[in-house]
Every structure is written in C-alpha cells, then in structure tokens.
Length: 351
Image 1: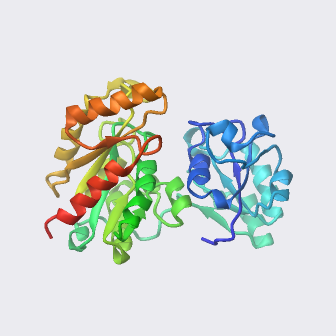
Image 2 (image 1 turned 90 degrees about the vertical axis):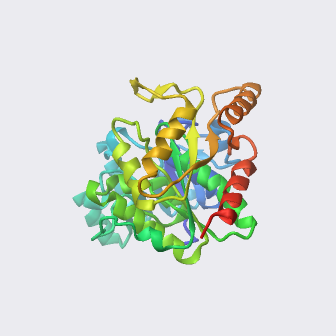
C-alpha cells in the first residue's frame, strides 16, 4: 500500500457512529490518509462533529470537492445491504476512475468484475482493489500453525459488529511499546484497508476458511513474536458462525479475548437467538477451541458506547468481578488491562 494515498471515503447518507464501520476505522487508525468523507447529507460538517473523532476531516457533498481536497483514491466506507454494488454508484465510480482515483472496495460485488468499470480502469491505468477477493489456491488447514513460535491471540465475540477488530487495533501499539514484536492479522475488508494486507475470510469458499486463517497467521508470524488475529462473527450466530469456527480452528490461538456489548441481549437482527451470560459464553468459546488447542479467554473487551460513563464503569467492574478477568472498554477507557493480560500470558506461556 502506497504511503502517498489520500482517501475520499464514500459514505453517502450513512456516515455516522454505527453505520459506517469502514469509514470510521480509516479515520480512527489512518487519519493522515483521509482527505475527506463524501456524504451529501452531512456536507459542511467535520468527522469530529458527526462521529466524535477525526478532528477537522471535512465532509463534502461531491466527488469534485473531494478531489479538490487532494484525494487520489476512493474508498467505499459503508456496506450496502448484502455487500452488493448499488446501481447508482456505478456512474460515481466511473467518474472517479476517469479522474485517476484508485478504487478500494470491500464489497462482496467485485468492482473489477463490472465490465464498464474494468474497461475504464484499463483505459486510464487506474488500479481497482477488491479487498474481499481471496488469494488463488488457498490450502485447507491442517494444523501447520502449531509449528510457529509466536503467541497467537484471537478476538472472539458474542455477536457481529461488536469490537473484535477495534480491540486488536487498540492494543497493538501498547504491545509494541513493550518491545514485543507484534503483527495484526486482518481478516476483514476494514482491517485489510487499515493494515495494508490480509485476507477477507468471509469471501473464501467454506472449506478453505481455515486454510486462509492458517496462511495469514504463518505469514504474520515470520517477523513477529505475537500475532493478533482479527475475529469475525460469533459461534452462536445463525448466519456467520461458519466463519467464526474457521478462524478459530485455522489460526489455532493460544488465547482468546472475549468481546461483548453489555446492552445487547440477543444476536442483532435475530432476536430469537439470546446471548448467554458472559461466564457461560466464555466456557462455550473455550470448549470450541479445546479439542485442537486449549485457548483460554484471558481478558474481556466491552463495547459500552451506548451507556453513560458511570454505568459503563460500573458494568466493567461487575464483569471483572463475575468473570475474574481483566476487563475494559479499549476505546472509551484505558486498553492497558488487556495489554497487560496478553503480555503476561505471552511471557509465561510454556514453549
């Protein structure tokens, strides 16, 4: 990934604290690359005013305004229903390509497979990056990760969109500052965009999800003592548990970090699937890993964005007391309790 990239992030009509996960991660973890956000409904405001961080990053209403701000790449920063490409975006993407903007997309629809856009990219010598396109010839997983010396830590969660990627990125710097060579294994389109490498495992054919996780961990472990693997889904999610188990069994973590949102009592959009108490959920996740490699949950990362500060702090203390595990909200409060837990586990892990 070029260090000279300047993103115009497409989030039209949906830029906000919850709706624009990819846009928000770029702004939080790579603000120096963000020239502007494209959302006509909020044009004239700043990222800080809309999502609570990002400072003076401007929100613009047109592609031309974004280009005037120095953008040389268009990033799709929101996920339309089903990850499909809206028909209305094709003309916008075409104009971006004609203006020499690289295209970075995490949609399930591959932009480079759209004939009109593929032809334009070739004509204008513009690169289209489909972040979810898996590598060719992935293997099936067969436990090759057991041969690496690095400590592997996987974030798992009670549901989707609950903080698994964010937790790993929030603690990454803290571990590196302690002299622990740490790499982040990105497994989703947003993580790949932030890290600059990875594999979008939810676009991999089912039999090869474990192999994708295994391949990614082996690559990250080449120059690291510790690998933080971005988790996906949930082991009880009726739609996405297959990806969750593929990651768990392919990456073979030594330890897990449990991510949860205290106010969420059922799987999002599947109210019939109730989330078990956290102590029980921890046991479920540990039991799922145990036959291949014991992987205890060593800390808990809570997403308390929808709680007032006093309630959030009280909830953290309650979870800490009930589970006996270090607990924090890594974005809202100090991530050090989880950094401490991982560093201690890493240094004391039997080799």
